[in-house]
Amino acid sequence: MSEIRNLKPEGLWRNFDDLTQVPRPSGYPEKVQKFLLDFAAKVGVEAYVDAGGNVVMRKAATPGYENRKTVLLQAHMDMVPQKAPDSKHNFETDPIETHIEDGWVYANNTTLGADDGIGVAAIMGIMEDKTLKHGVIEAIITRDEETGMFGVNELPEGELHSDILMNLDSETWGKFVIGSAGGVDVTSTLEYKEVENDQEAAVKVTLKGLRGGHSGLEINEGRANANKEMVRFVRKAITELDARLACWQGGNMRNAIPFKAEVVLALPQNNVAALKELVAKQKELIEDEFKGIESNVEFFVEDVEKPQTLVPEEIQDNLIDAIYACHNGVLRMIPSYPDVVETSSNLAIINIEPNNASIKILARSSREDMKEYIATQLESCFNMAGMKTTLSASYGGWDPNPDSEILSLLQKIHKKQNGKEAIVQVDHAGLECSVILGKYPGMDVVSLGPTIRSPHTAKERFEIATAEPFWNLLVQTLEEIPVK
Image (cartoon, rainbow, N blue to C red; front, side, top):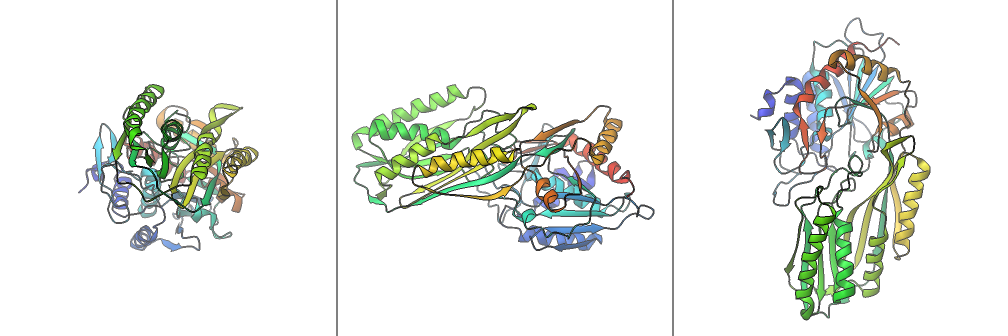
């Protein structure tokens, strides 16, 4: 039995532990959908999978509370599948293994899935508890939030009947989020005919050990992007050592800062020693530039068998120039909230092979005009390399409502329970609230959650001390929801 089942509150941790045993990476919802439907049947609440693949649950009001406003609790069922380089974990088949360390719950060399498994576990706890007092509660646990908010975008209109939305996907206890950034996927592709490799030697160059992280919440922390650091080296290798590009793989999730990139280069045999020296110098440069931020940089070269084909030289040069030039990181802060990022982009995934190239970037902004600006800037950059660029999975920002009734109630109860004021702010991370509001504009909305750090990385962790106050706040708020 996992040691986390001994933590308090018991219902929250037991349900989270059960959830960790269900493989649920983005794109593979079937097992977790069945798990949630089986749970609902067991505890006696209505549940079904809607047309968007989301699991919807409903729990009747406690006798005497039928006149309260209806509350929608919302979380997402999928998790980001990231693991340490030496991990053999298969996210499609293997359960998550957890352990406790210094007051935090971690997974063993993988993402923990507390983002947003804790939100799901809280919903399960509310649904099963017969002692709680509350009005009618709806819940929606959405499909594939991490890869493009597909489930919530396909949520049918008219299906939900709530007055209040409490999103359980925020990651700092004591903070209520009342607005978030919108985003759009920028994908550039190019097909071409590979050319024969006429070089004498080949090497694989690997950069790994970077911190990575959440491309919304942690984009302003100055962490190294493996793709952007690799392109600096590759351009030097091409211009100074006559290297040629065979392939490039960097990053694997659109909303995670890439912590690893690999390239295979072909070059004259006489230049191999110089290239190895260049790798060592570039490693020192990265360590110096990111001192105090990146402490586990690995940058090394291996001799490999010569690939049969290469990227055509002109296309190679255009691709490298575009990757070098494209914006990555924070573009602008919110003028009225100077500590909050307004607009950013994350050079998330690069896949270059001898006959095709694909580059994916997630651009974010809390302003629609600036989201369009950064997306167009990126599109223009890759268009100049001859690539075809498409924009997809766009979602709007969530405009804050500081006069929210549910926000006022949460603030009052938080202060009473914890003896201090909660923080209210706008986040740069994308939340599904904006999409739900677009379909149900009358809802009163707030986002909250316990403390999670380093989501989207193998260092993801959940602060145990924040679980119980989060649960107590949620339960008391449901009891005090005002009448209609």
